[in-house]
Amino acid sequence: MRRALVLVLTLGSNAASLAAQAVPERSQAARVEPAYRRTPTFRLDPFRHAMIPHWGFVVSAGAMGENNSVNFADARALIYLQDQDSLLPSDILNTINLVPEGRGLTGVAQGEGGFYLGGPFGGHFGFGLSARGRGYGAFHLDDNFVALIRDGTGSQPSFSLGSSRGTALATAEGGAHAVLRLGPLGSEDGVHLNLGFGGRYIKPVYFARAGSTVASGDEIRITNDSIIIDLEVEVAHTPEVDSTLNGKAGIATDFLLRLTWPTSGFALEAMVANIGKLTIHNVEVETRRLRVRTNSIEDVADSLDSFDSLAVTDTTDLRITLPRIVRFMASAWANRFLQVDLSATLPVKGDFESPLAVDVGTTWRLIRVLPLRAGVVLGGHQGVGFTGGFALEGRNSFLQVSGQSFGGFMRKATGVGGRFELGFFF
Image (tube, rainbow, N blue to C red; front, side, top):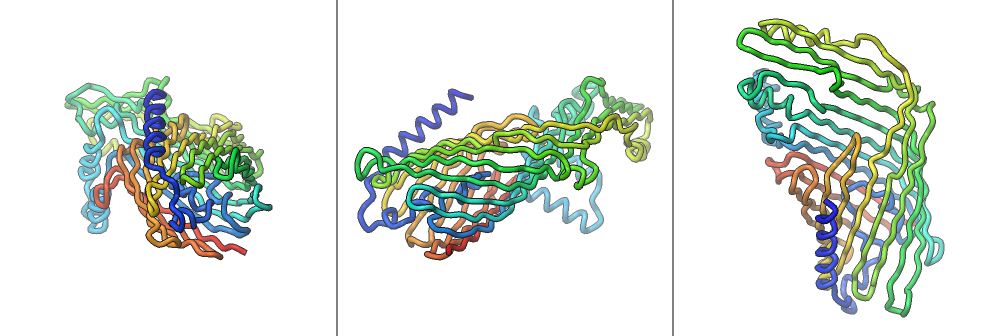
């Protein structure tokens, strides 16, 4: 994985260097505010608005959700059958057949929305304050469990939940970020150095986690004349929002290093964000058990009603590591109208883990104040995704709207995302 990342970044940097050229006079590149040259990414970015060129405020919101199997056409078919009151259990089971063998069923979701206020102090320092809510969600059904439905019982006699799990976290946060601008260094056309740093005060609003207790030896066994189910699932959650808000908040820190060569329209950037942990108070941990011995599928359905807690085993404090963001980016003006951006986001481990993702984006400024954007996403959970959007960048305000599809386009997409940003300058 490290070798692959180094290769991607090396090739991307070399390609961007070759494509970059001296910015022609009177071209769009020469007239664009430096803050707008940092193309907004669709992913979580605490420095998203820290470089706005004037004092002002920004209202923004964004969300995405994806899975690795079910596309929009399949989902719409299930919704249609449900609306017609003709959805059968077999229709849902057939959908599981779409899950790739060996990968299990995986899904992730992220969302944020909030407010930013800030601007520059002179030409070398910028500062901003933000307040927002943020949510994370992820689930994984182990392939051993999915195989029970996808492959039937002919492949093996028994199945288990394996590493199946699901996690959700919602937070409220307030942050302060600063950008120190140095340069040009060496000469009038030299490199500009931007150093960004900041922190966010984070309160957990809600937390839930469920997963199989693998050590219990859970089993699902289906034969010609019997069904045997013996499962234990551990569930941890905060029963009330108020009890969590009264707990101890955490601090997340963010850092940014950006080098720009304005004359050649080239930039390199590295960002590390979400460094920190949360302590969540009053988390109820319980074990839920399902035991079935029958020869009737109807009895199994009835037994699901008894899939309840044995007892609350503990009320404790849990310490959660935030999903850390490590991202590298290169951007260049390929000609007087076109900016190309290449970024690589390293894998995240833990409750909200995600694989390596590479984003390639383009910004077309045929009209200076109306950039049009399009790009592709490589890697991630889906392999291929598509992005698009536009912006209106005026003297006193800006508007940015973007959308993204994962794993395909339109009906074949297995995920979707959207982002909206509206800013006003004083």
